[in-house]
Length: 207
Image 1 (cartoon, rainbow, N blue to C red):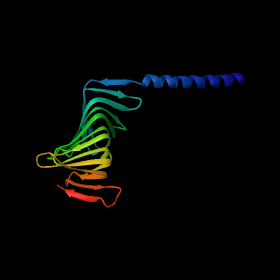
Image 2: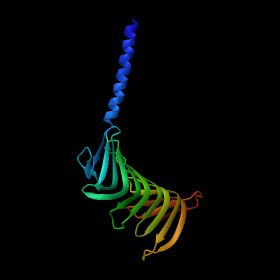
Image 3: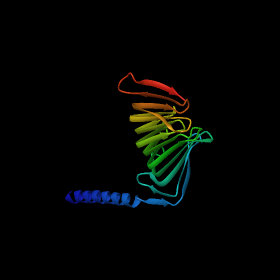
Image 4: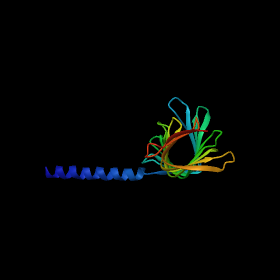
């Protein structure tokens, strides 16, 4: 019986040792010099395209790490947003996109609206964009500064405190400034609302 127990213990350690070796062997990083990839929905509609001159795929963690990323986000056949960044990571079957370094999200409309930040996390299924760090939003009429901003599928950008808001005049010059705890900018209606801890400060501005 002792010999049987010894054999079982030996086989157990042997199997565990083999499993660890397999994990190490499968930890393969595949390098891709030039990446140009399209991501489609289950219905066959193009959601976004992504380009990078240098990328690596981690087959263990199922992540795609890219340098100097450009992402085109589609609405139907048209490009809705363009995002540029120093680097990015695709995970969760390309449903979570994290961009880092000099992030720039451009809205392709007449106002040339651009969101800048240090980091952006895009949840593809929820159409939610969360920017963090040194946020700046600029259009032909307004200018925002904050530490965090969220853009949802309703096309409303929520800016979190502290928020500094600047209105521009017809010559694109700064007209006056407002500080607030929060601010909401509607891209479609070009309207702004903001709140402060003192409930007295509540306004909606249309351009």
